Length: 486
Image (cartoon, rainbow, N blue to C red; front, side):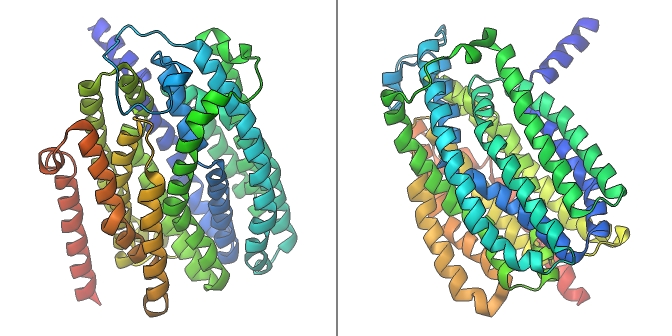
């Protein structure tokens, strides 16, 4: 019995998915501990500004042009034994080599290239934040009662961003060598500390500036923590990498994947984030705050649902490098099923509980309408479908994100602009959903099915069909009840 308990605890402790969920759960405690204070201690204008800050912080990582997932993926290739010359394209796989050892020479070249590239991207990101970011904040900050605190808060974010962007290389390395469970365990601890600090600051009426300082301070601490973790794993090899320059062979393998991934991320989630920035320039503060709150809650559900699949990406890339295709598909399938069910559960839970809970705490911001939340949910489900298939196909290191998200992004822009005057903020999820359904979903899945010899119905009937059906039944019932009550 003791052995069974010990083994169960060991599996839990070393599970990337469970540890990632643990990290997300601790961060999600801010919904219970910090969010009520934000919604009651800050003014409506400050709440809108706080979520606009969060949006801009999220946008800064789009500047990495897709280098972050690419570097993590090719480090995983190196862990599977691949040489630098093998990194460019893994659509044609070699025979399975289950005893493959990590190629540390290749990994060192990758990490040194990664550090140099990331430093240059940090400079570009800070320049864009200091110019375009500052411009987008002029109206929202002037709408607050304490303009000075608003600008000081933005200054703190810019300063902290320098450290967090440069230090993101430690995160890429830890994920690439499949130390996700270790990383997420420490994230859980520091997230609790961050939440406690933010709670105390708000409780003591620290205001928006105090909240920003507490939040950004812990982001800097996270970077120092990851640097320390890198020195403790794999015999501290990361600290021994001394060749601090870009390796031309590695960069040649990385660049095509990186810019395509970057364009793909920008034209999908990037445009959705930018929509919040644009809406804040002409929308009524109360409506902007309501939309940004709903968008933030949807992001939390989405991020939480990514864990079962995205934590397996380093392993999937390693299996691809080894040529173990059958195991790769089985692991991906299990991750997808759990991801869909996690998303549907979170979506329905927020849909049922958000409005009554906000009323209970006396929030200064209302939750979006059931129709808006439903449209956002369908959009995110479609993104999950196409996104997981495109990630699975990306283990071949043949990147199609720029095409999939580029075309769907154009469709989103056209549809949203055409409907914006007629249906207002609803044009954002409607346009996004149109882009996903008309191109992104089927194009991404088509490549995944072909690469792994899969058939649509045989695969999806046991993966995505039932969760989607449950979601549609819930939406139909909710809209029917809401309509009758009105």
